[in-house]
Image (cartoon, rainbow, N blue to C red; front, side, top):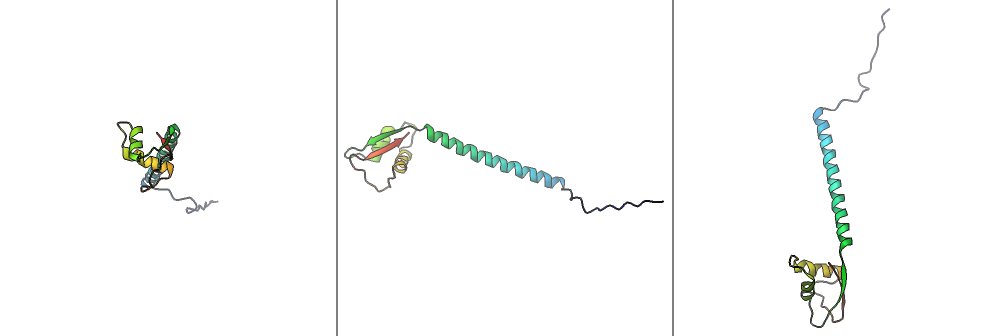
Length: 108
């Protein structure tokens, strides 16, 4: 007696082509790299923010942000960047005038 075996050829998942597997792995690696770079970049900023020192400066009569930034800047610093940071850290706008006795936080 002959036994006939019936197999269902459609039940197995179709195999991915080699090119498709390479593309999938490549995209996964690229995505992992981007996520790692973002996390590393963000963690680096937090460390730099914690390491920054701060001092309190009281504005004197006739003193400008340029004068204050120049006194804390090193030779490699751009004074405009320091002015921007002082404004950002103290909530000062570009057109705000400094008042004698005004307290400024300077982070460096």
